Image (tube, rainbow, N blue to C red):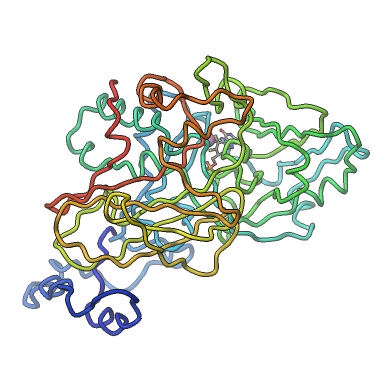
Length: 461
Ligand SMILES: Nc1nc2c(c(=O)[nH]1)N[C@H]1C(S)=C(S)[C@@H](COP(=O)(O)O)O[C@H]1N2
Ligand SMILES: [Mo]
């Protein structure tokens, strides 16, 4: 799955199109990689299986048994309760995350198994006509499909890195340590799907939002009744009441049969198993927006109500799950996204941030969705630090980890003095947010790839 060996002939044919690449001087992937298995071996040894699929394979298809990429379940909890299964971004292909690999964050260990015939959505509070919809009624409304990323508020935080170290220490398994990667464990709370649902604005129009209603409280039907305050302005803008994901019904772990999809906003807003929307005149200070999912400021207070995910990019290949077999040509590939709009530009540095060059962006580019970028690179075999940074359509540039602390909050909030940033992250036992740092990966001489960001903090667990 992680192997990215280009087919030699196909590659050479296409190589004329690679601008700026001195093709003649590149030691391409050498031929032995394609020698395959000696033909006198019995077919059973070559892994050849009978060609007849069984009826279950055809009724609802599964992947080839040779594909093993998965959402690891063990890591990432750091002792917190709930479900956390992380997208293997190291294996990501294109921009869409298959439902089976979409990350899962649920604050309950329980997961509702809802019969859609029993499920209803109530819209009430400050409305002219309180309404209750069955799933059947909801599906009669005109629906839309949109490609959007979903990212957990705490993705890519130093806290997640600490959690990973804690989990590994607890498990005390060298095997596990070897197969646990920063790209998945720290960054894997982000996925992109085509979501299908009804614009919430339509349903709110049906109910008639009253004048004083400035917020809505969305509530899910899980044991903990996960709830979130959301401004009506956003609700009327681009929020969906979604029942579909990548061409099929939502998966159970993604909130079957109905969830809120709040494009570009932190994951916590995207209430799964959605059963109630109450229009109100102020935020309700519910648990996930008060005691959790807020930033602790240096003055001990918490910064409250940050919503939008900033400009963010990440090289997914090569990353710390990969190994480069030899010097030569590699296509660096990665994902960029932003909660405010479309990605306009991605730059890549292969010399530890000294110089930057534009990457290619895969078209079409969707707003508030993963954008795939690629960059042709000839690795000369010496130690190299590679990284990407992106810019959105408004000119917002992805920051470094050091810059993030200074960007926190607005003028009303104290920023962390530059000299105290490192200490703050190393010692604060909080889940920090607005985590869109530039992620450097270090390629070592032996071809191994290491995280060159989180591991530089002196973290004691
Ligand atoms: N009902 C319910 N909705 C929920 C949650 C939850 O625990 N219960 N977790 C929230 C959080 S914190 C995140 S990051 C997203 C994750 O969505 P996913 O599991 O579909 O990836 O769902 C949000 N919606
Ligand atoms: Mo989350």
